[in-house]
Image (cartoon, rainbow, N blue to C red):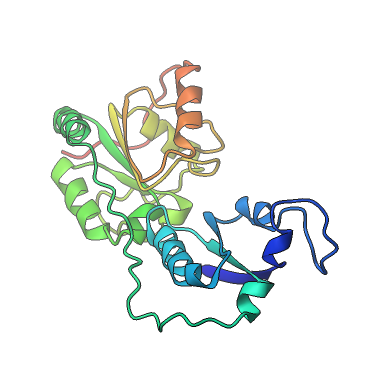
Length: 235
């Protein structure tokens, strides 16, 4: 989603009170907590680039809404700029680190009890087929987060057919020797309200670490006793 709004004249930007109608101390700051990025235009020539940069931000994983604000005087002013003929809003391709990919592949290939947690990032990346192929190759049971529903076929033999808020599912995942988390930051719901504390190795494949560092610190600071598994790994 790309939202475009007006703003007070450029002379009033930068804080302070100037007496403009609908003036806020910092309008862009009001939206930074609910959007991925904010783009402020100050001249007519900046409009095409700002729109392109905003679209690029919205489309680059992790996807999110963006905000473009254009001051009133910029919108009303005449301009002699030529018609925009080309705008590049191609999202950035975030390439994984090859050395980390090699370590992950080695851990998964040697795992005796692998498991996969699939989040909404799998759906947004259109990677459901690749997820299924990987799960079948590893014979790894799969459970999806609330945002990842549909990322893996519910009726597939490797589907846990459960949800992460189920204590039995959490126990099962904690007993895995390697857990692959794909497209999820394991927030409050997907970590079963922060009670998920894996005892094995965890491999994370996600475009952002917004929630991950906090989750990892909780795992490292807490020790848990072993519990039984609800179902067995298929071989």
